[in-house]
Amino acid sequence: MPFVAAGLTGGLLLVVKSGVTSLAFLIPYLGVVPLALICGLILSIQSIPLIQELNDKDFAYSGLTLNLIFLIFYVISVLLFLMPSS
Image (cartoon, rainbow, N blue to C red; front, side, top):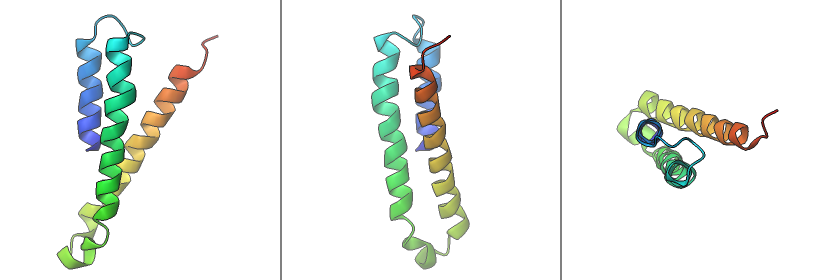
């Protein structure tokens, strides 16, 4: 899911030619991208009890780590976007 969100963001940047301040970019970026990131985080947290059963701890923990890193990058990018430029 974090790569879906990253792909969606990249696609938005390529498709929307009017700039990142247009509604065609902001609505999906502030709506769909965080939903994909939160969905990925929820799914990776739900998979934690299955780690012992499936003996797949490296894959599960790396997914959780990637979800957290991408979510942190997203929050930082939104904060930087909202800060007034000087």
